Length: 285
Image (cartoon, rainbow, N blue to C red):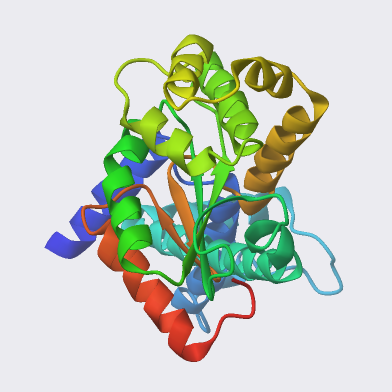
């Protein structure tokens, strides 16, 4: 009784907050019809009252009302069924989404992991590639930087690819353009570390200041960051993130596995994935 009561309260809360989808509710009602028919089965006058008439193809208004009463009665007594249907629907949808994502990653592995013009740190010819989508204004990206640095410094065979995902502010896109311009002078990793390691808002002014501190050709930086090549590369990174369903930063990919965010054990998780794929082989990365 206590468990059923808890379910009932949870389902009511979900309905009130609109977390229970219309589709799940519809499926729940269909399930209730079957369960209600079984509950009010053979020999029940109430079940007989909602049975279609001989040769009929539709319920009468009176039968519809009786059926509605059965469904209402069953849902009131067993509201947990809607929660169970929602869970089953969510699980099914997640499995379908995961299957589609893995198929997309397999068919687009070169673009994700082995693009010729990718921004790379570590061994350019490394045996396992890690990809990170990030934003220079992302606090979690800043927090995860030491973990990324540790992996690259400790593992001399890992290949680390950076994908720009400037979604947090206008300044994020400005800094990303400077970063891609710095890449064209062979200084992407140096710029990336300095930019993420700096304090304050990331924008064009702060990014140009970092580029200048690294001794880069500033005239070329300004020309490249405004050029079509950088614009196209940035658009490609954004489009790829959308196709992969990446909508937050940081987001790490290794093979067909993902690590969203910057957990406290980020280095250990990345190291475990890299080590695992190194042993078994990775057709994607």
